[in-house]
Length: 151
Image 1 (cartoon, helix red, strand yellow):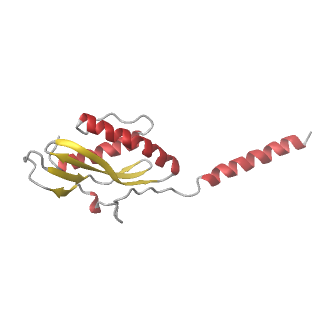
Image 2 (cartoon, one colour):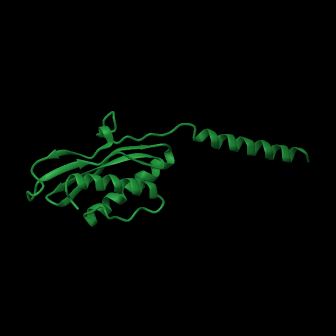
Image 3 (cartoon, helix red, strand yellow):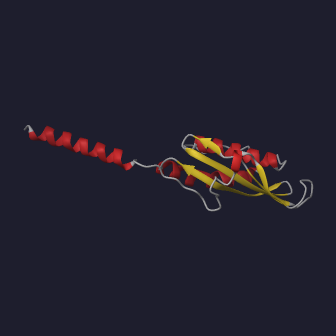
């Protein structure tokens, strides 16, 4: 009868050690197109391509928002506009602290991108379960839109 509690304790300890060992190193995801310094030195919004002044109808321009820190990593958002219409949104730099955060971002970012393209602005709803990611995404996006002088 004394063996049963000893086996349960040993099993609990082994399971606890396995869980601790599972998260022993941070996972980092850097999307294609990101430079060695995060694709945005200094963290300031900068127009990366300007085909014409903002008032020219149909001009295709892009801007990269600053790197935004969020609870589990950092990201920046690149926006492309044609005239005043948002035609593309991407996340060139995404670095996360752990695998779970990477999975959350991989699900949340496409939803946020779709919402931006539908709303045609940075006034979007956050993704439930990805609040910090959503806020960082919206802040970087707004800075990029401000650099392009687009509402």
